[in-house]
Length: 172
Image 1 (cartoon, helix red, strand yellow):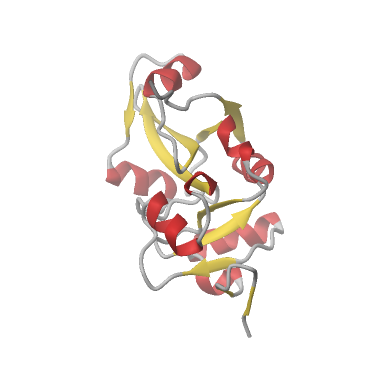
Image 2 (tube, helix red, strand yellow):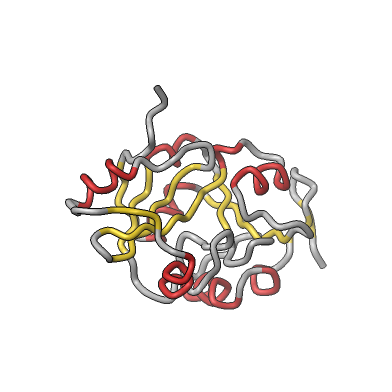
């Protein structure tokens, strides 16, 4: 039987609503989180924030970039954009750009719009923008475009193996 929290969204066992690979990663980590599934996709940060009823900046985007041909995961709050030049400098790379959809799926095992911050097919370097720490709780994809979970940002960064950096695009 599912319960609901203060958002009024039914909570269900992670194993039934998360992508199977992500549910397995949660079990391996011994992490119990509530996964919420929505009838409409939450592929974008704005869609997720609207469905959850939280601030856009509380959504964690899991974005795959290519740095000199090597995939790297960047975790960024939903209201911000990644400054590719700052990522390039942080990594000491010659060229950095957004990864193609096929590389995202190959690297993570998930489709764009549902990539979680951990539980990927392959081990990837992770950069986590410091802005994620601005909230006591953030939401991230649970391996499916319709599913998200809530977690403390410091725990999320630790589980993802992330290096805390400042790679947010600064507004003019």
